[in-house]
Length: 194
Image (tube, rainbow, N blue to C red; front, side, top):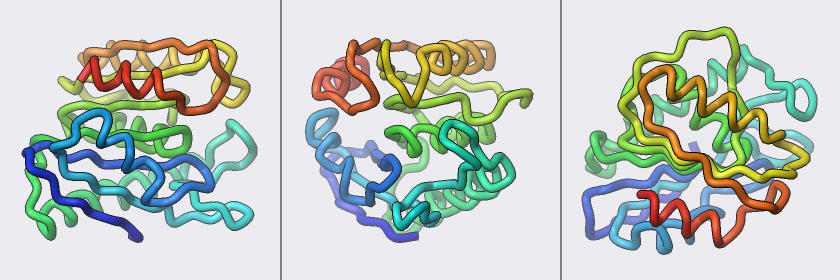
């Protein structure tokens, strides 16, 4: 997968997953705010929708192609494991950070793999899959959501938090009064939480 890796001075590694139309560079600056000592791995989604990179297909806005999502989730998780060996970072110290489409596939990895990440920071996520059993998690999860997000209704964040809490994860929701955009204040809230 197209990606960029930047070696840090600490032992934590951020896995950055962009939103629709983004790339592997988009979220790297968040690492400087949240933990400037961490390694940074930015990954580009392989699926193109009208020329815009995404991590998985959708049937319509807000309606995921679940078969593709499951396949791409496994592919992405496998790539992260390969990258850990290639770049020699600690798989026990991973923090996945996703925005929008990237947050959705990050949540899907939580739904598929128990304790794959030390923590997850999900900016404007939706429930990736419904009617599936989520494996037991010890992962700490931070969800940043917009009260009036037109693309990701508030109930999606509430439902996702509930599903993750039921699996054992520790979850905090940070609410913003903005729409779907990623804001400085929610990034700073994620830093303080982490």
